[in-house]
Image (cartoon, rainbow, N blue to C red):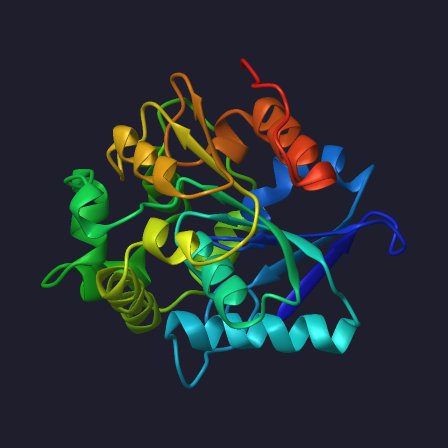
Length: 265
């Protein structure tokens, strides 16, 4: 996997996992604040960004690759944060290698398929047959930026390197990832999985998320040691739309693994 390190290597480790069709670059706006206090590790999951395709895109298999990365780096007791479906990989990592994970932060991670909203028109066209396979390789930079903007509730600036990362993702790989993600949360919901794991959990949702029903964040209330934070007027990508509040939440939780005062954007 392609890996980017920020911050001092001797600082407490913090792993950031991106969502489907994205890359580690999506975390860019919050990294400077996090790297002042943590050894921040960003990965491009298999088939995304600068990482090559994988034989399997099953969520546990992706978590296994992250675990192998941790083992190779000699990292233990890592604070792990996942955005969107990256939260599923983070959860699977905690399920299968609890020795590696100290705390979990899930940002805009839909708890179950019944919380999925009708997707914005542009995303439906790009991601589904019959037009998706034809349009995907022909996307312009402007189209890619509009696709990201469709998941946000606020205007956002998307750097060129993030656009380049998204361009590398193939349509077949993305479709496979989406199917495997759906299978993972259909087998067992994320709150159900987390309830069986003795870890502190922070859940962050935007109240204007167009991808997942924002009120579904409260499904996580059933998880022991879980705390839910809602960011008013924020869409599906809080670390780009509201990086200051998102970074503050991540910092407070990753530093202690326990509750910190709520943050108002």
